[in-house]
Amino acid sequence: MTDKSANAIDALYREVILDHHRDPRNFGSLENADAKVEGYNPLCGDRVEIAVLVKDGKLQECRFKGEGCSICMASASMMTEEVHGRTLPEVEETISGFRALMKGEECPLAVEGDLESLVGVRNFPVRIKCALLPWTTLNDAMKKAKEGE
Ligand code: ZN
Image 1: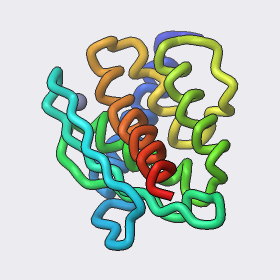
Image 2: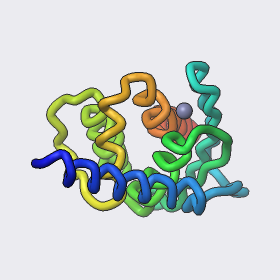
Image 3: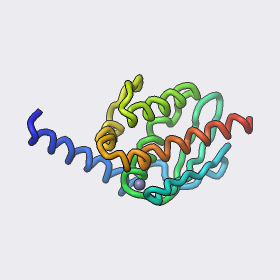
Image 4: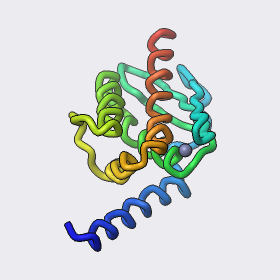
């Protein structure tokens, strides 16, 4: 890959991240949530609240609120799209797959679409926590929802 095309891909990814940041999907409150969990990343100051609604063994709704950098907000927005409507084992798989991806480990998850744009974050170790915060918070929310069953 030449430098030029690498830059073009970077620009494309940046555009996808900014788009999610500007227009976050599934942003807002979830009144009938089974669990709500707040996550905080002191390194960057990102705050995110993840609310989940589980029904019939599926993650029926996943919404987020919060304030943070573009990486964190975009990651949260993409995550809610990714896990929406999935079965609970699928959600767990997606979370651990994304974690592996961010750590540069072998990833069992097929990373496609918008989520792919976050792969570049791996090159910036400080920002990995920003990208992971919504996912670790979702993981906690799923645990909490399970306990509340
Ligand atoms: Zn951040």
